[in-house]
Length: 572
Image 1: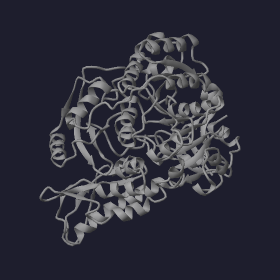
Image 2: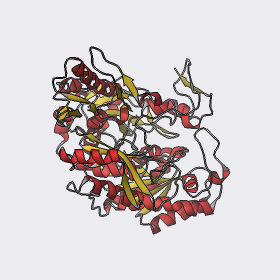
Image 3: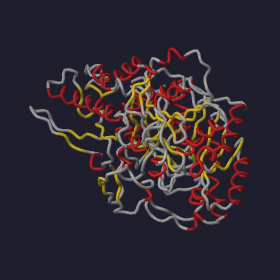
Image 4: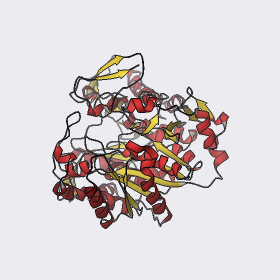
């Protein structure tokens, strides 16, 4: 059965019933039809005296075009907790429309480990991303309108840092020229994908409506000609931006195929953004359950590092354990067992027995275990198994994970078997959460910008050093002078390698990370260091995906990334 057929074979519980199971009142749910709802932030005050749940992060090794199943593992683990008698919630990131229609596919999970309605998760959901884009681009329009009407703030057009945002992958928008009139010169502007925009980051990190409004007001639009910062508050735009985000701030409540509550809120893109679900979704979930499973984007050196160093620093929540997801075929790819492209057949060297490639690829897993342990958090390795995986190789990876420092390792078959297939993994995660966890960020706030970048590059990536291009040097100096050196760092680099070079698989060493620019996200409260070659607006791949209308169902078939060129994505 396809993911679509599996999802449609289940009759969801009414969302009011899902909310009631969490202890949420009827008037604390804002229904969007029968199967999804937003949760009013008013519930946080009422739930504040409840004990806080155990907090489990799901991360992974460096991803491959085949997908390692981080989302399915998060969903399967949450369902596994429920099967064993625990109250559990999974908090996921909402997928972007850009990759859904091009290079990656949906973000609702797959097989027997899905969040439903899966078509809603992948297509708009409750419209949060559109509200983010409208809020972001409203500020963009205010900037150009201010220039048109005389530029009273004396903004330097050459130092305007605020881009525009679009929710669809479009490489043509990476650099565009806009024209004005009345003597205002045209200028070049960039687009970023909506889910990786600063407004999305602010939505994810805001603790309440007041904090949201204040963060929006602190957005650095650019510099005046006297090098003084100009903010969204200076342009009198932040209040209107906050109004557009009023409903988007409330987390979205859905459910898994087995009825386990699921929050799906804020954006992905852990390679260029912080790539985590919202603090508010986690805050509500932590007061409504025994265990909360949350997912971070891409590998541990990206999404997990940002979860620890940015999200936890802001929220004050401490994780009890982290699960590192891997597969035999991904380890073999990192060990030189073959290459694969999205939509192309997977070579036998990755799917069949290949102990040599597997042994070499385990070096990548070792780094990710070390990354989690660097934050003082117990690491559990989850081997997402396929039906034809050699049993001796699964055992080999389990034993190697323990030798590399994981507190436990388990094979999981949640994709095929749902929560039942994750029971072994769930049991070892429960044990890990009962053990000691001494979470601490990787670097102190007081470290310099370069010290923070170099700490991440050396300890998370295994780099020999960092090289700064001339533009980055100037931007680092400017950020320090403006008083932003205490901000944490959000690295933007390829997710396909521990390094900045997507072709370097396994556990490379001796490389130097090149930083081409530093962006100040003053509202979000972090600095984005962009590696050379990294794009903030993705492009679609070369496949021709056709969208057609059917009478029944939505998004038929498996993940889009596994389709052949010219195949059809069916929507109702």
